[in-house]
Image 1 (spheres, rainbow, N blue to C red):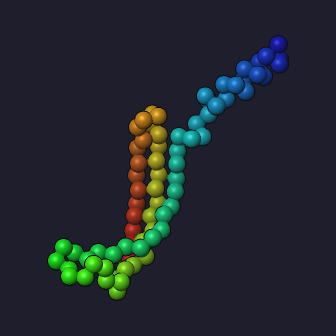
Image 2: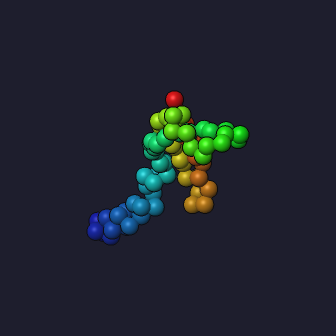
Length: 73
């Protein structure tokens, strides 16, 4: 009986766990704004570092709720 109960609990553990509902991450890169009337494609003099954090909660298999906080200086 203990063996059957153990197998049952191990087989249903993935269905009961909430380990994959939350996702947290960070990202890094560069940021550059040139405007609409700029003649040059990219002016590297205005390029600055950019960092951010990301949090995602899976509400259902097809619907996540995402929040991110990007920042550049």
